[in-house]
Image (cartoon, rainbow, N blue to C red; front, side):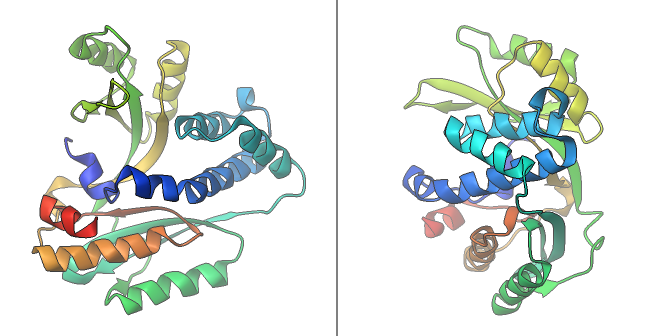
Amino acid sequence: MSGHNKWSTIKRKKGALDAKRSAMFSRIAKEIAVAVKEGGPDPDGNPRLRTAIQNAKGVSMPKDNIERAISKSAGDGVNYQEITFEGYAPGGVAVFIECLTDNNNRTVASIRSIFNKRNGTLGTNGSLSSVFERKGVFTIPVPDGKDVEEFQFELIELGAEDFDDVVEDEEEGTKSFVAYTSMEGFAGFSKALEEAKVTVTNASLQRIPNEYNMKDLGTSEGVSVLKMIEAFEDDDDVQAVYHNLNVTDEMEAQME
């Protein structure tokens, strides 16, 4: 599954990521709120909350922010509803949008407006069931001094099914890769990693496009699709956006 980041998110420079840090924290705080409402404020007995806290730490969300989100949600905090949207961008690119919202009417109107303004088509739920498959996605740093292949073999024994290529952060001097599980294997692999004391910087269930459904477009048309994806990602109610466009280096260069 090499190249996961090409289609699940839009590549951005570090400065742009830093500028969106507040939005990132907001999304994680919402996930914490939903987890607390669903399973209580104790992470020891709430796997979804443990994962949300782990992801918060993975993006350096301050401890005070995490504790405040948990405390607020355990009281009379806002109740968020999970809703999804499915549709098509120009060129027949499939787009799947996950939202957490406290106002369905606002969210529906916003998502529909983006589809309309960007020449897309909002479809019905279930229309993309054959395009995307839900999988567990784990970003795992390679421990210092550890052989990558040996480490990945250990993870296979714990439940990993596939891996992306290793990515090296030259500034930090670290290596990491993405490991995948089935949707059904997500919880078990999470628990196995925790028991094995394997560090995970992010873990989530994501919608992975099937390889035979990937779309190839020219640079200009591809950039218009990526701008549409970016518009969705900039909406405060949107948690994640998935698509099946094969993103080229030329497209990414024009988005920078």
